[in-house]
Length: 178
Image 1 (cartoon, helix red, strand yellow):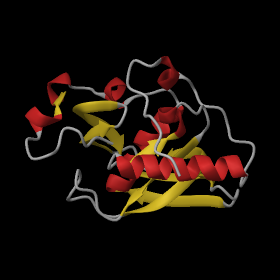
Image 2 (image 1 turned 30 degrees about the horizontal axis):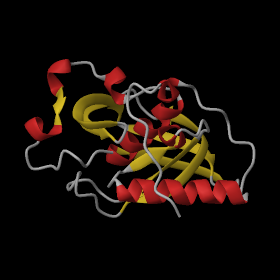
Image 3 (image 1 turned 135 degrees about the vertical axis):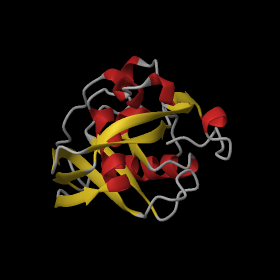
């Protein structure tokens, strides 16, 4: 398929609230999802939201077997999640460093719920409901934030933990951001 251009922070399209998906398993939807996976893989990302490529729909993809940018992270199953709803399963939050394909070259520590349930549908309108924790929960929250017009720097509580990847994490390629 096609690797699409990823919008960068500052583009007003990243600040919109995405529209619900109403048509499923169409040729256009299949092409969009294939392009999103091609784009995510080409950029070594852990996930990608449709708004990041300029498509204002409630659609996120995520997942990997192994990610060089997060070598200690467990596998996350490749998932297509449409019209998602997140429900925290506890009030516990944990700080963790995140990057973003739309915020290249930077990383920041973001508080996220440690456990949550995500629900929605896949591209065939089949229901998805998973209880997840740890890195999987972090990735889902990061991607779903894009559907709300929220970029991770907007969630940073302590800006002393925000900076250039090459400075803060010298062993990580600064061009590899998710």
